[in-house]
Image 1 (cartoon, rainbow, N blue to C red):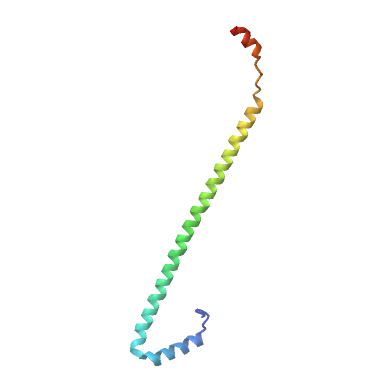
Image 2 (cartoon, rainbow, N blue to C red):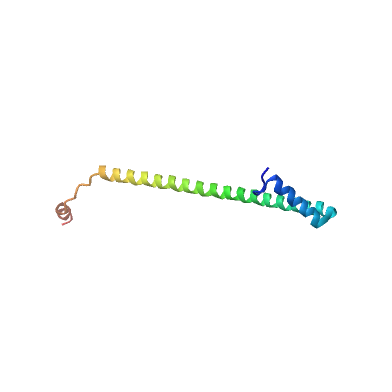
Length: 102
């Protein structure tokens, strides 16, 4: 049993010293307070971990959507480039237009 880097013999020594300092009447009350404090730290730690995971997942989804959007835009740009390459525009003769007008 190793809690906070403290082994069983060290824990026993701490408990004996605490018993001598605080007495048998105060020791259960102190133990309860310590237990509640540790429990609240654990709850806060779990809540922080849950929030952190949610935010990380949101960021991951956002990055994924941005990548998909960029890929879609690149595909559209390639399609437009291929379409413009395949369409040939014949130059119109300005002389024939001028002759028709005049």
